Image (cartoon, rainbow, N blue to C red; front, side, top):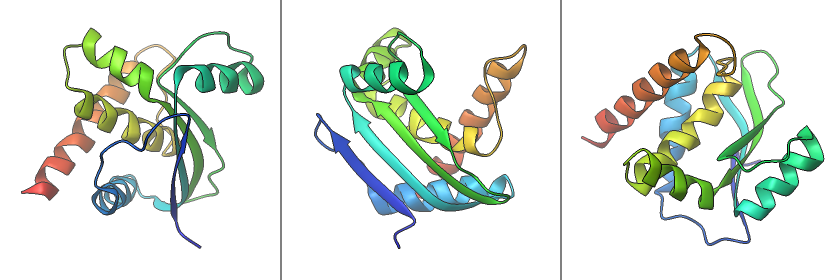
Length: 143
């Protein structure tokens, strides 16, 4: 079985180097003492992420990522829905490139599976620090 699945729903596959992404995600997981085991990325539009948010979380708003965590011990397992519409909107809001924001969101889901949260007091800053560290790892891998 493939450890990673890359799926689209209502959108085209973003232009990412999938083998590089899988190496990077695996390295980030290892840096947190975990193993990227069964990870599914579902790239979608805003309407699909809103449907998922309403159906499974009873939230009535758009978001960039929803992570469903099925992790067991050190083996990371999860489904991550990523709205490419919201990624593009957020990139404009924070003056980032679309590709940089997409990478941040891709790794954000993995960091959730590693046990890092971002909803409680001080947690957002910890998540952002880990995102920055993971993005730096990718930059190092590319050189």
